[in-house]
Length: 287
Image (cartoon, rainbow, N blue to C red; front, side, top):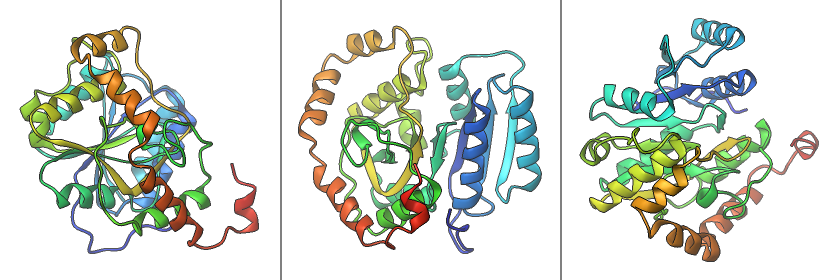
């Protein structure tokens, strides 16, 4: 993985990482955050009574050595994924926040690129980076889950993405592997609906659509890449709740997946990647 970014980088929004039950994924995520995020960046590990003994040990060791400005909180009793995230986001007030999935592995420069994306257009409510398992933001193929890249390949993907022209096309909604959320837009839309949805996946879609209805934009940040082992997904009943509230959502999503209006962006990333450091013998055998 590439080294940490240098000094002089403007302060980034708070990074919010909900702690989940997968110890190995958490360990990999924290290591990637240290390697690819500027020292001193504020990060909040919010634990909804999920971490077991091994995860707690991982977090404790990481807090002792991380160059990030980290805080860890743990509830005594589980509140629920959406309610817990809404509580954390509400505690941030109108501040912008980047929410990272606990099983994600961000590439070098990811947070800086998301912040730069949001700064280019004040109408952007959410910015979502590329991901190998990112649905409408998936790369190389729209709607397809590709194998998670190894560290060296992820570093090359991040460098290739940084070289892309920042067009920031519209997405149907934000995707839950990683998302920059503008605090003012979230506050105007009323936050997450924990009464209707049990998964962050569905609650984020609903929030995105409400913000879009108020005139905000949900865009692709094509200059950043975040890896993940697999896609997020809805809880039981979430899809029915989305369909009832947003009857045009599934037709719009199907249209996007079928015609891929940002295919040119995917192809540009592939071209940029081809021009970044030819793969080493070691990379050829990475997953």
